[in-house]
Image: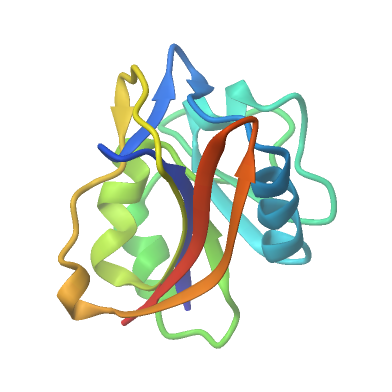
Length: 155
């Protein structure tokens, strides 16, 4: 099963200049706990933005070229989706924007940290029809005056 996890702002902001626009400790903890022990799939730019390989997860990088240090490298998104969309194993898509857009139609779950703030961004989460999903609020929080909600959308 394909799932997506992301922290997004009021206007679907994700990143700016190769970095996240929101750095919330609770969100980082939630991301780690949710993805631990699973496969995580990301684009090359997301991979390069990480301080290193994500521990205790299978790191899969989508790129037309070989990627040093990744557990797996895939160049054909369509084949990966065909092979994995019906598996019982939860596979997390972790970015960036174009990777989210490619996988969104196939994702059963969207784990979104909805940040009640706007920010400058050059990468955005794709728009999606929320009426196609069941919305569950997992937790609300606040950090440094920024309100956020952990939400799970299930198709």
